[in-house]
Length: 568
Image (tube, rainbow, N blue to C red; front, side, top):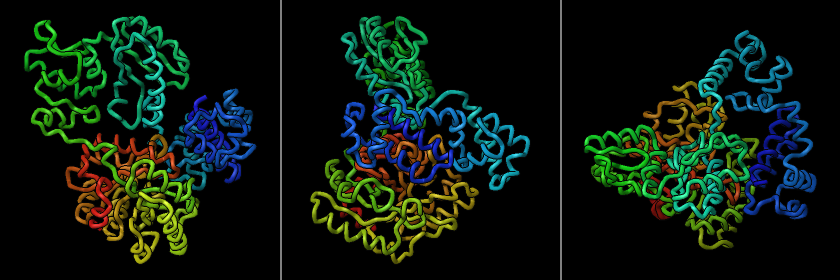
């Protein structure tokens, strides 16, 4: 089994134990174990029991359970819990405001077991009879259920999860001798934050050989359709994958066509028509003769356009920019010099400051800020002024022991309900970098949330607003606020906004990042790293920034440290 599959079972176990009302520490042990498994570079399934036991955050009991999962695909406790808490029940915890404890209350009081039961409880008015479930909560749940109904049964997964699957598929397919070129297209290639399915385009003279090789992939659960040019499968995970095989002379045309987006493609075809050309997935033609098709670049060039990066292909002005040579020079990972939002064991991180510093050096960073939580985040053992002073001593020691990296003293200070901050200005003034974030009461009315964020932005000790909307993809809707007003005040105050690289945050989103760029608000791309492995999540934030048209000059942590300090 893959590490992600093992971690998923441990996460599911933690979620079900939480709903069952098990004690916090047992639930946390499973969640910590899941994170630890994800952090491992080598396949845990290949490790001995003793080696698994040596992984931090995993004791002898959990090591045995993990070994059982790796060998059999499950373990008894997980199986028992699923019989009591089936997936259709647990998935209700994804609804806004309906965490494990509230769901347990609904199970006990109203015998809620799935979405249909919850919908009936809302319609009958029984839900609001339970303390803590008033009209506002009832409305939020009703709206969330309606959105799910409108979305249908299609399952979208995080880009990061899709990337893991895509890597396995492409590695497997490239072993086929008949494959000459291969790319994953669709929304995945455009780096959308969630993916509904995978579209793979291959170039080969012998399509039958490629299709035969593809259907032998071990993770396939069902072959839905198989033909000479297209095969559709559903993986055991439930994800649909379409493979299309075209002649090498058509590869560029097919890749462009199946990358999309649909509005971008329609715009390209309209340009082709004005030039007396026909554009489809097989090439660009004039009177039946091929004009271009082998590469995307030659197709765009034949249409009088510069090649457009896949992340920009949403018909948001990129074609007009390509026509006049005004496309942005999109930011790249190599442009980043520092990470300005990370956590350590002082709060809810899983590595020491020194371990984080050494990993930052390995990743080629010039600086990183230790921004552990402030005291308001009690579950993370947030820091007060005294805790920050103690941490400062350790940071000073790390600075002496680890060369090649500047370790900045920072904080992720909580934005309270009224917009004031969790720590005094005097305390914040002692630090090198201040991230201000909201972690609770994220469902405030839009006007209240707007005023709350603006007050934090106007605090001159604040350098950046962390994960501004507070969303968790698939789990929590974004807060509602007046983005235009937030951007106006942020530009006025010189306060940056964050693109958080955590795969389930990616916050701000791409359209908000584009709006920030256009008004002149600077951004920070951060990992919000809680472990050494999390530094690698930066690629997901880079993806989001590129979709938002961001260039190196738009992002503060592309600057040398002395230039960053001068800004303060």
